[in-house]
Image 1 (cartoon, rainbow, N blue to C red):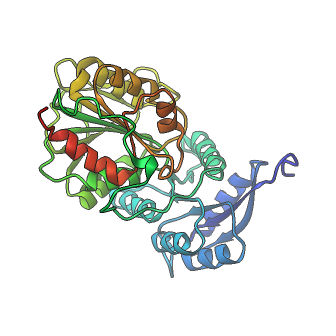
Image 2 (cartoon, rainbow, N blue to C red):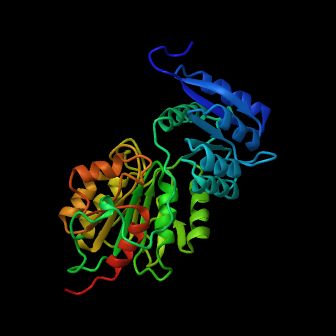
Image 3 (cartoon, helix red, strand yellow):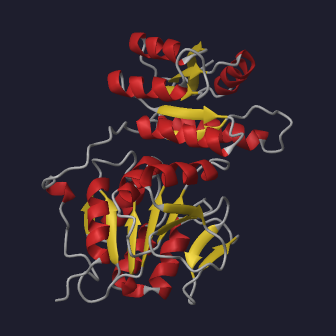
Length: 358
């Protein structure tokens, strides 16, 4: 019996394996707040179902006959945009990279399919599945916008001159993101030239198992050198380093990358807060901090600390954010010198990397 206090979340499951499909339906129906209103075996059937009876969330497999999950996601987002969660068995980097193509097409999250009931992490994966469906049912769908060639609207304007734009040339960029982050990162990194003179450190909250695929996808689609960070390496100009699964990442006093298994911050590890705090402490005005779409407030106070120490600080604007929790919290703290959409964040980073003497 479903919760009578509020309408149940209507979910469509698109999965070609009958065994996996039945298991996913059973797991979803175990939550009284969720109602599985349909279960189909291919992307074409998913597209038809969405057109006839719009669910609140679609749980989308990638490898399906007739129409795969990527194409189904693309078509749904063109015709009946709604929250799509990619649910994939992450068996290799290639499969994970394909999942990110679905994010590029408009899906808002990737999670691992909880199939092996003898897996020690099975219960945790099921809990993550249910939580993701509940949370994603409440977020808005953001259509990706073409890169503008003219001025942007009022919300896209800088709120004040960026710190460090004249006095101190930045040496490093730190970016933090959560829900909706991967396609935004792709837009920003894709807008940087291969000769970009600064290293970029990225903390992206993401389900375990998808990181290698995300790195491969970003490297392929942006043309930059993208890799998973290793302890003790000196970050190189024009290279992008993503925090490894379950490790905090920051910059040390020696200018090299540090990784830590310290307790989670803001319920996550890696945490944006850890990265930004290290940049504030060890780089001061020679850093740039960028806080992107995501739930909660991870990184907001630490972006304020960066701002207070003279760093250039940027928050994603509300209009382009899937969830404006993290950047919105930073803006509320007056932590962001600039509030911009993704396309203009790339322009701002290029400008900050080449300061004009004043």
